[in-house]
Amino acid sequence: LNRLTRVPLLGSYVAEPLFLDPPIAGEQLAADLTRNRLYMLHGLDKLVAVEPDGRNRVELADANQAGLNPSNRLYVAVDETTGRVFWSEVKSLYLTTIKSANPDGTAAVTVTNSVLNQRGLLVDPIRRKLFWVGSDAWQRQELIYRSELDGSSPEVVYGAPEGMQIRALTIDP
Image (tube, rainbow, N blue to C red; front, side):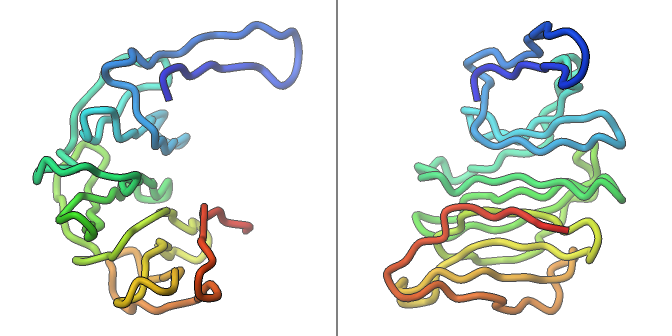
């Protein structure tokens, strides 16, 4: 993302650029409409929170303390009920850790310690579950995992046929 634009779906069309200066723009974005905050992992691998107009930017965490190439393994999601934000943090060339914190970045905890080749992260707000995609130990199969929001009771809910990729996660409440 290097430009975010608000466009009304009803009424007259007036595009309103919101923010995203290229040096801080990111590829992953999660919105907490309850608290009027956007969370993103920007180009420098930092988790930041901003208001929808780009004001009050706060850096919450470093998602790549190891300084490795994240290779599209950084993701962010938010639980609008509690305001907790979830993000992936690069741990090694192939492993990420899923972390969680309060909306202001305090009380950060590790939710899931080692995810191999992570892609995708989302919160199911109705069932109160966390979902992510990772590979099996032999990297032959991509799996969708589910756990409680605190990381407890992780389980595989879907395994893609060998050789097939899971490109994205979305929830259909």
